[in-house]
Image (cartoon, rainbow, N blue to C red):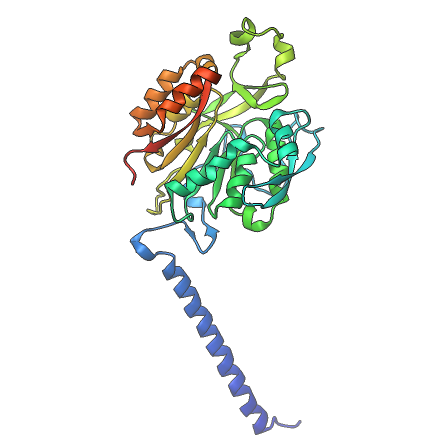
Length: 347
């Protein structure tokens, strides 16, 4: 047996030294990154492009629902025979993606013809105005539909998006679309497949034929029957039972560990159910900078509220509606309007 030469032993020492130096450098880099994520004296759940959402989510499952795990499309007994109509979505910054849309639906037709749903365009500017550094704050989409506003915000901001949508056919389209996105977008997205209200439970949802965004909770057809020429069966798809949760029961802005993350902007489109959605989120409201919402008189009345009641409720929880003169004009012309309400207690 030949003993190793002294020259080979000497060659190994520099290699080990270099390996040790590289390991030390890696440790120093990790310490620097972790330390840098807490600069400015504030705790954050988002740093270096990675979102630690778990401390903010109080419930990942409930009565009849589970938070989407982004591994497969959401398919139920109501959508097992559904197929996607694929089209190209184009955000206001030019970013494009393949999008699963409905056949014969108003929002879907607009995206096919124009590349996007124009009502979502304003959200990017509102988000940036409420949070000027454009990073590290959350956009929340209540009533995400098939995801037009979700895509707009994922593509035009660096921030996480939390979406809520109860309608099974909309969920089928939305989840198919998200699965085709690059990980840098997919990893910033959370989806809760239920309706928001003021309590936990379940209820019916009915989507209007040709307008899947016009989906009402509860039995509202009787309230419209006398006002419409169409029969109930012609105007609405069949009722589907969906789970219901209050927002405070699922999301917290301040975790047990003391970490916090504000909601820079919430889009709240609940087809008249907005009053009950607000009632179910008193703990989270102080951490929301702005709410972009629809005030639709007919839908609010059908859900046991009214436009006046809703506006008063917004004011009572510390928000101020912007440009009320435009609100009144829109109501006169269309019976509904889109408004922005700012949190008076947040700078």
